[in-house]
Image 1 (tube, rainbow, N blue to C red):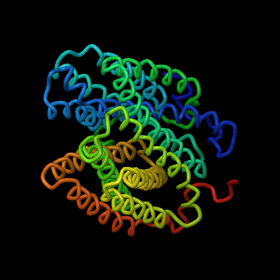
Image 2 (image 1 turned 60 degrees about the horizontal axis):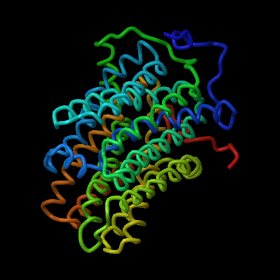
Image 3 (image 1 turned 90 degrees about the vertical axis):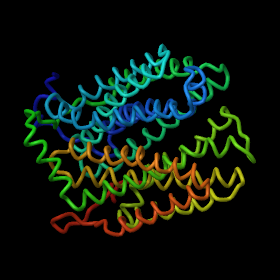
Length: 419
């Protein structure tokens, strides 16, 4: 284990916003945060081709997509515990490398069992990327720099999703080979892992601790009994469940009458995720001015407006609606990640694990319910379901406080930083 991760460096300072160190760290953080989403979503846009290539049904092909989410949920706690003992950065880089190598192995799968098992293992390893990154930010960045860093993290998630959804779809559209698509993505991500390893600073404020299951269980229960954290977990559950439900349904909506858009063209549709990148970056500055509760409420309203536009059967209006939903979700997600890191002053890895478990459980569970709603009630029924989730999210956001437990102002970002 690197010495830098074995004990706290008392002479070091945390990474400051607007510093050269922050800019270098932001590159590594951006690239590292792309790795998980790119691999989790790499199958979503090419499921029909995977089903055809493996001679499996449409329903079975969805198992290939969901297996990684199940593995992610299973791996969150064990990987988080390992990071408490052996260091954030070392476990992060090891998990990233192994998960990307598994992405390459998917190319050689020939039946449903093989690819589902590998996707499940891939999800377990990817849990060690996202959860640890959030804990790393909370430890290594000074408080005013946490939200800008979380904005970079959220932007990386958005760009990773974009890469994972668009690149395979484009390659399949041009070559017809899902194996080539995944192979190219895996090689590209190996390069991303290497560059992130070179630019992400070594941990200076990580203090290793022996793994005690009693202690760890206590930390998890402590976080779950904290009303402020519980609201955060429920909010991210709703946010991610809503956006996944929409994007799981959109391919079927856009590839059927009256639109009849081809898969390769629909791959370009995922450019709306760029709205999430800009919203994630802007949300910290907005929250610093008007408060985090108002920012969260505006995020929900933005998503509701997007859902309303999705009901209009015109392509360009649907694109705008999807962009608004994405912007609202990522703005809210950035605020919630920042709050989670600041409220959890101990057991950050466990708090991150619970946050991500809520996010991915919402994605999987509410996304599955959304698919069922779409099948039973159609597109408008799905939009009504999403509206219900957003109504719950609005109510939960009303309970968010802009003050810490000692009554001081809960800042998000640096009010004094240049804009």
